[in-house]
Amino acid sequence: MEKDSLNLPDEIKSSPLYSEELAPVPLAKRTWNRWNLAALWVGMAVCIPTYLLASYMIRSGLSWQASLIIIGLANLVITVPMVLNGHPGVKYGIPFPVIGRASFGTSGIHLASVLRALVACGWFGIQTWIGGLAFYSIWNALTGQEGTEALSAGKFLCFALFWIVNIYFIWKGTESIKWLEDYSAPILILIGIILIFWGYRSTGSFSGILSQGKQLQQSTVSLVHSEEGFRIALHPLKKADGSAKVSGYSVLLPTADGYFDTGWKPWDGDETYRDVESPKGLETENILEGKEPVKVQFRNTEGDLSTIIDAYPDKNRSGGSRFWDYILWFTAMIGFWATMSISISDITRFSKSQKDQVEGQFIGLPGTMIFYSFVGIFVTCAAIVSFKDILVSEDAPWDPVSLVGKFNNPGVVVFVQVSMTIATLSTNIAANVIAPANAFSNIFPKKVSFRAGGVIAGIIGIIICPWWLMDEISSVLILVSGLLGPVVGILIADYYLVRRTRLDVAELYKTGGGYAYGGSGINSVAMVALVTGILAALAGKWWNAVSFLYSLSWFTGFFVSFIIYYLGMKNRAVSQIK
Image 1 (cartoon, helix red, strand yellow):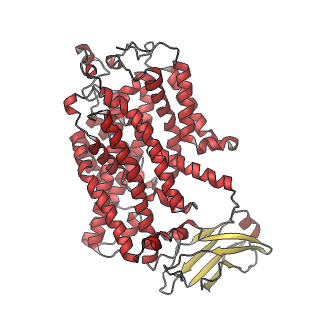
Image 2 (cartoon, one colour; image 1 turned 45 degrees about the vertical axis):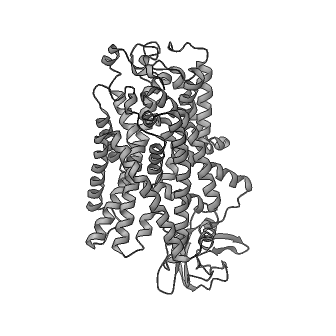
Image 3 (spheres, rainbow, N blue to C red; image 1 turned 90 degrees about the vertical axis):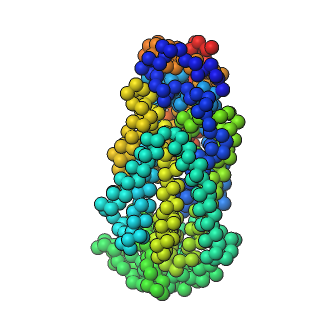
């Protein structure tokens, strides 16, 4: 840690780029040790999106073992740039927007920091909406009222209340955030253990529960080509002993006059493939080309009905195709924490030492992500054999909100939803507020404080209408990955290769200093590297010939921008280094 960096000349304090909140953190205020940082990561990593991560992969056909391995490896990989970008925060005590002035320029950094901030604001809105739904569920459980699936005034009121709770912690500052994370972490770990115990107690066998994962990764309904046209392959869920949960099924076939109902057929569970009748006007060609789905529904002897499932023809998948599925999901998991890998110095600037920040991050992040993803898998596998009305994998209660809806005990509902509230709050404050607050404060240091920046982030979180973004998480992750990999590449290339970890901190606060790049405040090399990296990462989304670049979007953007920036800067004179 550079003690000299704390002694800035008095004239720097009058600079429009300076504010007390963007200045180096005094040594006396660097109080976070490895356990505080580990607790921070537990608090951030335990959230509904983490709980859901494995479900997206399993439903795409991956095994639960492969899903956990991908999650574990991806989080080990992303922790490396997390630690690398955390280094200047500890060494100089300054946040990401100030560090980024060295590579992007005193004005150019706004593009990278605001891009990161807007992504965080989107997540802030989503997490706040989730927290509001938890409040809504608690209210209904305590009052005995029936909730509604549709948007309602009650949901928006609870959203507003949870938003205010978030703003309270923003207003209290970083020490209140540290307090929140320290106390939340052990509670959240205990909750995970309780959920696993419930799953085990419901079925009595760990291996028996996990073996149900095979049911979740296969398609419930698919169409198979035959000489007559097609047959239907049915895979409804089974009981723990392998017997059928379903007593009947119904098929709706697309015809020229609309859908034809074949009526309910008995299901004994012995025959997977079923023939279907051919009504007049059957759209066989459209069905086989995947233009119109065949619709299937199941029921049990108690009269419970499954979701109506749209079935399409099976696509023959090669080993190479499956390999790229793994890569795509691996990249998406990298993208999950891509925003934090950029702005982690906003937090590590409060760390006591480099050792604390390295150990704290490696202790807290990978293990927590694996553990809570496992909790999601284990509890869902237990639920599909514990609840009789779950007939198909599409109806499996992957998220805690769906799971708690299976219980009629108000005490259980309140306990689970309070747990969700703690998890969501601890994630939201640390992951989605600190960085935007600093980014917005960095635009107008003398006018926008950390508090005001946090409130701005909260307002944007409302404007993006999170209640309409809930189902877009996986696609957003891969897009975010492509956009933010280049920023990380530029930061690391600049700090480690160009400047050899040495910064002139005083120059970072001067409008005409060494990081003003000729007075424009914009480093053109960084801008070219950023745009090129983003275009390269996202090219495969629209151009099939290079689709692999999109599958590897985070890595593509990172390495393209890393190389371009280094080549463009290695022979240029950089700011005078003390």
